[in-house]
Length: 402
Image 1 (cartoon, one colour):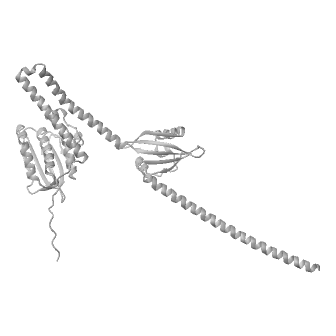
Image 2 (cartoon, rainbow, N blue to C red; image 1 turned 90 degrees about the vertical axis):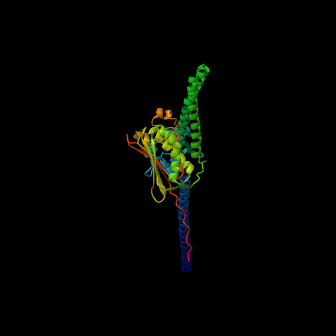
Image 3 (cartoon, rainbow, N blue to C red; image 1 turned 60 degrees about the vertical axis):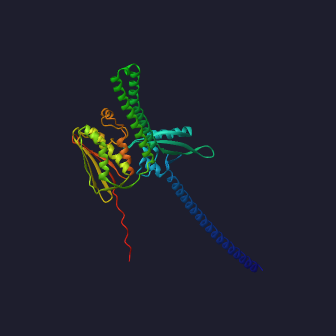
């Protein structure tokens, strides 16, 4: 009996061992499957994280403003392309501190201020460099749900262009005010003198009235030039482009200025080819030539000559030049001579009745035609003002194909 029970027990234990082994194998398989699933989930999470970071970077790079993110240790986590351009960054600054990346104490001070206050708006910062730039920085601390700082976000707005425009506006207003004040003061002074009794002396009264008329004309010219340049800069003037023969166009301008040239004994020469045709607004180009030739007569050598020349520069453009044999233009003035209200000789320019806007008008008209204008001069050997215009090319009919 005992041997039988022993055999049954051994068989039962064997069956239990087989069942346990199968269960262990199943459990191991489940564990492997779970591990594989967890690994897949982790890989999927990493892919989602990388995709999310890439999407965020694309979003940041689409911003016009510079973007910078610091973590809670002060290390740079993210910058966008606008910030890289703004600071002219050549290396990857991620992982660096503000001072390591930018070497700007003012920017490091701003970060410290944000840590203390949590928010800073309208912080203006001047960036050093070959071309100085001005930026406005808005910064805020990033907080978790418990209110603990996790990092800092800084947004940079480039104010350079706005400040340049503001400076230009201030200079323009100051120049206009000065240009208006001078003739108005003279007119007022002469009128008061006439009222006080000078009108009783016919010769004196006539001279005073002629002076008043001269400065009233100067005010009229200034206002007309201001309106012209305002329309040109705002794009309100539409160019009537058509075939414009250069030689007769120059001849008309010389006829208008012949009396002024005679007064200063200046010989005017039209040396332009008779067959050269520009694609231009003839009335506006007459205005350009009138300003340039008038300047050459007024500021060139008395008893000298002014020559107008033209040539085909290439297959698309022509070049027109106005040359005089006067004293020339100093090197420091050549870069600024086309600026509004800039004068090489202020006193002489006002005596001649100039508004200081003529060359600026010339520049805008030429650029509206797609050309460029420049000056060449050598001290004591005169000046040459040149500009380019599109060459008129007559359209030829296309021959019918057989």
